[in-house]
Length: 244
Image 1 (cartoon, one colour):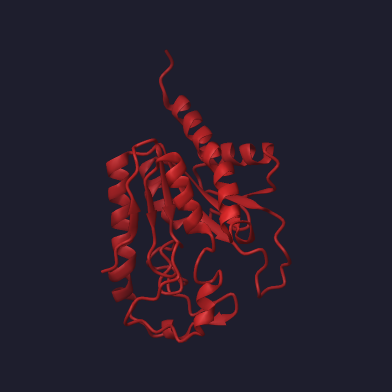
Image 2: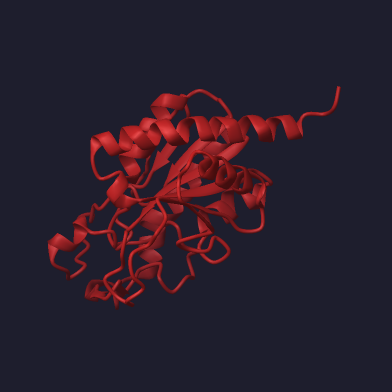
């Protein structure tokens, strides 16, 4: 069993999630890849962990961090999803995943992570779940070209938090994708499970990874996103409060 890293902040209404915080490959697992690939976006959301840490410190918010690479198992996928243990990612083969024991990896990594997140939610009873990710400026495969956004806000059916966040970022002059560069209607597993299934407002924040690849970039984005998250939380709380 591999447990996630937790920051147990005060109960301030916001809980932070970093599904792709690590590029670690635990003992006993051989992905069969060039180790240099572990520094690429296919293995880790570059900058997402330090950004989440900075936001947790700024907001005094609890947070959960994955401790295993998404190439070992993608914690932001349903257990039956085809890319839970990817055999190929952005054109790079991952031969060690082809015949790997899916049940064992779920029991060792996926299940403990989601149990810990569920416990954190029960403990803090947040108003808002915010999942922090990053995206690569340009994929190596597919020829889609450079992505124009600095940030994206992802969501599925529950749009309460996302609509507020998109508007706030655009008002601040941040080129922001609305359910871009991915659609939360397709890739929203963690928030579907822990947010929508529990009636908790949620959103995923994707920051372009060249924006948060160093400490000054992380600090800049923490200053942008921290007040935005507080504003979203406050507006959600006001809407939920009975009229007086």
